[in-house]
Amino acid sequence: MSAPVLLYAGEALGKYGFPDGHPLGIDRQGAFLAAAARAGLDRRVRLLPPRAATAQELARFHTGEHVRWVEECSRRGDGYIDYGDTPAFPGVFEAGATLAGTALDAVERVMAGDALRTFQPIGGLHHAHRERAGGFCVFNDIGVAIETLRARHGITRIGYVDIDVHHGDGVFYPYEHDPDLIIADVHEDGSFLYPGTGHAFETGRGGAQGTKLNIPLAPGAGDREFLSAWERVVAHLARHRPQIILFQCGADGLAGDPLADLRYSPAAHARAAADLCRLADEFCAGRLICFGGGGYDLANLAAAWTAVLGVLAKA
Image (cartoon, rainbow, N blue to C red; front, side, top):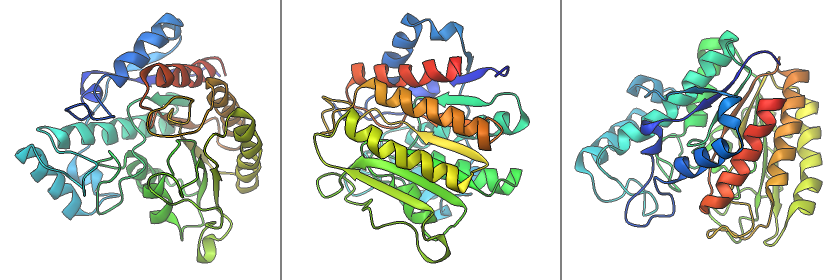
C-alpha cells in the first residue's frame, strides 16, 4: 500500500471527555499517543489535526432537535445530555462536533484517494442515536460518516464492524431495516451489560434480514472465544462484499477494564485489524476507516489501539 496511514490527533479531539472522575476522561488520547511513540508508530503514519463538523453536517444523521439540545446543554454547561450517563460541560457541543468532523475529514481523504487507512483514536461514539445522546456518546460520528459516504460519494454498501465490549446500538437500530449497511458486532452479552441489546437473533428486519450479525459473548470470554466468533465476522463481510469498511475497535474488551468482563489481549485487536485490511483490499479498493471507541483502562486502550495502528502501518 503506497498511500499513507492517517492518524488523527490533537488538542480539540483530546477535549472529548467528562469531568469529576467520569470513566471517559480527557487523558485517553495522551496515553495512546505516548504508547504509539514508544513503538515508533508516529514515524510510520501521517499525523493530521481534527476539524469540527457544522450543525448541517451533524444533521445528516441527527435530528435538528438533538443538535440544538446539545448546543443548549453546552451553553448551560451542567446537568446531563441524556438520562444520566453523559454529562454536559461547557464546550461539549464543540467537542462532540470535532469527533464527527474529524471522521468526515477521514471520509473525504479516503474517497479522494489521499489515503486508504485512517485511525481516529478518540471517536466511534456508537451509542448516540439520531434523536438522543447515550452511553457517553453525544454525537454519532459513525452515523454521520455513513450518511456522508452515501450523500456525497455514492457509496451505498458499507461494512460496519464493531468489537467494542458494548453493543453499538446507535448504529445498529437506525439501520436495522437497511440492507446495504452490513453490520458485524461482537460484544459482551447484553443481558449483563449496557445497553442491553445486540441479541444473536437480531439479524436485520424486512429486506435487511441477514445483513446484520450480532455475536454476544459470555462474561469471561477471552481471545479463544473472540477468534471463534471472528471467523463468522470475516465470512459475513466476504459474503456481502462492502465497498468500504468502518471499524470501531473499542479496547474495553481487554482483561481488566473496569466497566466490563471480557478478557481479550491486544492480539485480538491485531488479528481483527489484519483481517479487515485484507478484506478491504479484496472488496473495498483498500478503504478502511478505524475509530478507537471505548476503553477505560489507559494501559489497555494504549495497547489495543497501538496494536491496530501497527497493523495498519505495515499492511
